[in-house]
Amino acid sequence: MKNLIAEGRILYVIPTGNLVRSYGPDARKGVVTKVGRKYIYVKIDGVYYGGEEGVRFDKNTLRGEQGCNSNWIAFCSMQEIEDLRETSRLRGELRKFFDWSGESHKLTLKQLRGIKAIIDGKEFSCT
Image (cartoon, rainbow, N blue to C red):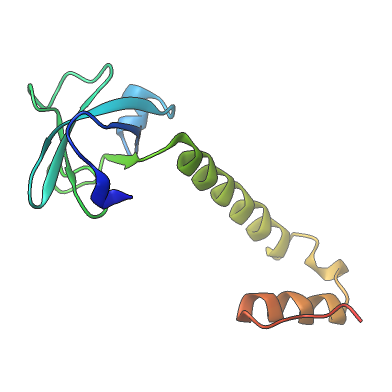
């Protein structure tokens, strides 16, 4: 999908790092204004830096290329952003569950073996 990026395409971008303080965590629409060999330029709604071309993004990773920090991440659809947020939420819940103060002590040996098998990518049977 990333190689289908052309001028005029709509992307959805979210701020990262310190930009979240200024722009909030919500996704914004952006329009690709220029496509180069290595970079694309995206004009983001409500963002005034970047000049007429907009903010520069790495064409392969879709991460912003302003200075030494990746301050924006672009996605081809809102579903990708929702999936990223759900992944982050689930990782947090699992981290909390398996933390020393969590409730992982309630798991049986069979359940722990099943979880380990899933993590290792092996098939697991509950029988």
